[in-house]
Each structure stands twice: as structure tokens, then as C-alpha cells.
Length: 185
Ligand SMILES: [Zn+2]
Figure 1: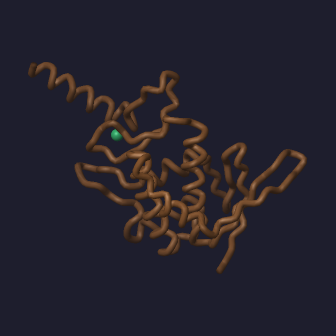
Figure 2: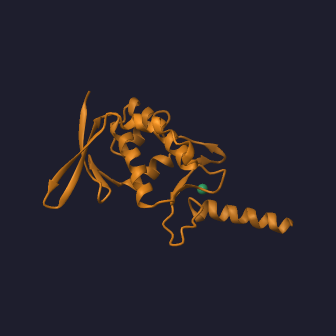
Figure 3: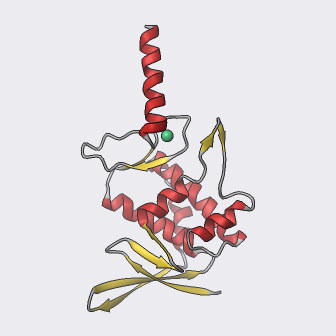
């Protein structure tokens, strides 16, 4: 098994992997939102040849095994966010089964190193990012309230009432729809 060793500074939730630096939240949302509905049809950036490019862009290896693993993990996380009671705990645990996180003490504090098989690393990071975002922003990770949309958001609004992936698209569309319903009376 090829092992890749990657520095993971959990405290600042950033990692540096082959020049790609993403926060937990950026990584999580990039993958969760990689199957958007466009013109009424679900597209999937992780399917076909594009999947490899997508994984490479996130700092992965781009292998078919990695893309499959990402697709499975994405499905499990999307379902868990929509309905936490239905979280596929065993499925997510299996992603992390062979990952090891070890601390390294430096004068700047503790950094964490994640070790996992090359093809597992991105999915491992994804599950850890999901967990870190849940911990950092309790109740703020949610699916867009537009049932026809397949995107997710982390709500950073002060009152915590954000419902849409984007005000410009789903927010305005849903408001217009609600207005049309009211106008019809
Ligand atoms: Zn939306």
C-alpha cells in the first residue's frame, strides 16, 4: 500500500497538499456541491473523465479508485446532512479505517499529520472536514431549501437563518415562487 503523508493543521483547518490549499469548509463544499442540478438535470462532476480532473484540482491523485471513493463518500455525507439520524456511520467509518493521524509538536504549536493510502486520502480529508465543520459551526451545515436544488451551504449569517445555497439563484427563485402562490390567493 502506498502511503502518503500530509501535514494537516487541524487547529487552523487548513492543509497543504501539492500546492493546493483548501480550508475544511472549501473542500467539503466543493465535493458536496459537485452534483448540481443544471436546467433540471443532475450533473455530476465526479462521473466520467471529468472526475479525475476534479480530484486532481482538489490535490488528489485523480485515479479511478479515488474518484469512486469520493463519489461514495459524497453520497454518504449528503444523506447524513439531509437527515443526521440516517447517517451511514459504518460507511463513513470504513473510509477512515486505515487512516492515522499523528501529532507533531513544533514551536508554533501542534500540527497533525494524516497518513492514508494515496487513493483514500482525499475521501479521508473529506470525512474529517465534514466533522470539523459540524464541530465549528453546529447546525449551520445544511442542504439548500430549494427542493429542486442539490447544493449545500454553511450558514455564516448572524441569525443563522440562511436557507439558500445562493440568494442570487435559489433565494430569488423561491421568493418569486412564494409570491406567485400568494398572488394567486
Ligand atoms: Zn439552491
